[in-house]
Image (tube, rainbow, N blue to C red):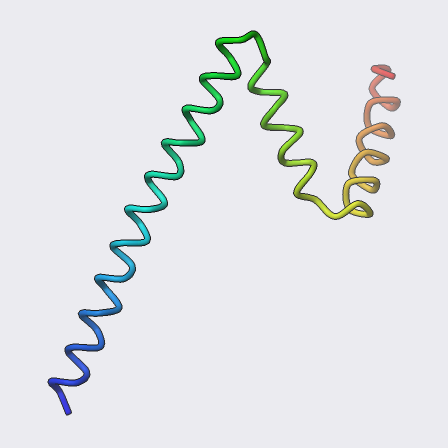
Amino acid sequence: MADATDDRLRLLIERIERLEEEKKGIADDIRDVYSEAKAVGYDTKIMRQIIRLRKMDKNDRSEMEMILDTYKAALGMA
């Protein structure tokens, strides 16, 4: 039984290692796209914010924007 358990553990570890390597490759690709965007004049900080906003649920995004507007108004920024 220990052999089967050992094999299963080894396979799981190897699978995680492969996925980590793929994740690193994808992160490198994303970094390359941001570099390309910056090279043609886009603001990559704003692009990252837009991507973060697009991931959010519409209701969550609306709520966050409303709270942000309230805070800005309270600080005289609006």
